[in-house]
Length: 92
Image 1 (cartoon, rainbow, N blue to C red):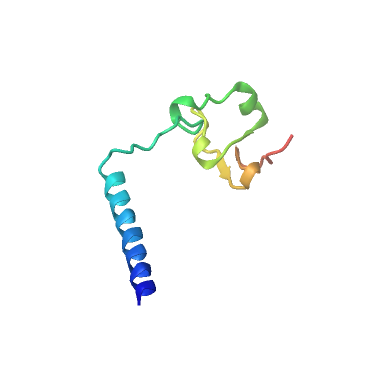
Image 2 (image 1 turned 90 degrees about the vertical axis):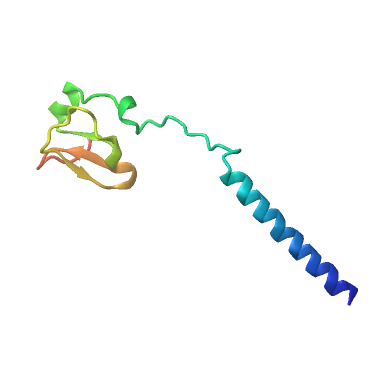
């Protein structure tokens, strides 16, 4: 019987700690750090004349460079994702 009681108290204590941690986190005492990432619009460099001449550039869907022509297409491909004009392959 004493073993059952101690296991019960341990379980109650663990649940209590989880509840307290949850409310502490949600109270705003712990503020998540938001880092400036290269995907923020203000840090994405504008499209270059070289990009326009090539007809494409590497970039994820949220890395569309300012000044990219409206008719350019996004092509998903993981690390090979790119923005390109129709009929142009994204490669060196």
